[in-house]
Image 1: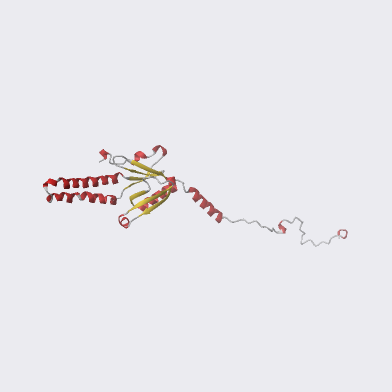
Image 2 (image 1 turned 90 degrees about the horizontal axis):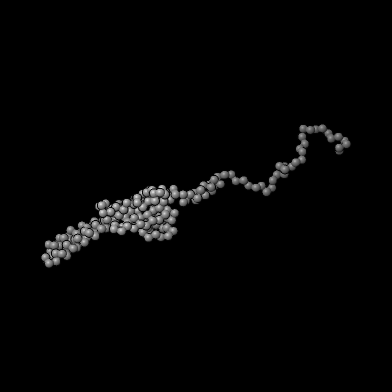
Length: 215
């Protein structure tokens, strides 16, 4: 199948000279192709109709079976060619069979990530990503059928942290903690006079009487 180009080869879209590397390459969960497989299997009962239809309309069940098989196979190839890639600089999606489309979003523009996990997804391990960004990019608003969604979401958050986009907030938090832990010096509005009295102090042990000419 790779002879016909049925492999997205996402490494071709990396900015290698800028040091971009793949952190995670997300393929569609197998639940994404269940409907397509059932559609292909539906071609079998369509062929069984040949036993009941007149000979003049044999082409009808044959055409129906061929359509179901080819359309189901096309959907499987679409899922195979759909990749969501997380790098150290951005996230992007590559999809398309004959013509390839790429949607990309820098890490700096990701504002929030919501993970929706349906009931069946909690059982077999898939979910859907919904991205909130500074500008909604077509093709990256929702990524469906992501395997291990919690781990993938944590990976994106880890990339955001390592990129330093939230570094100033952490530094400010550390500075606030440092200031709260250090002792606070307060200004004394009424200093003690004895600290600033420059009058010589008399020795209390001195018992000599003052001469009469100084009295």
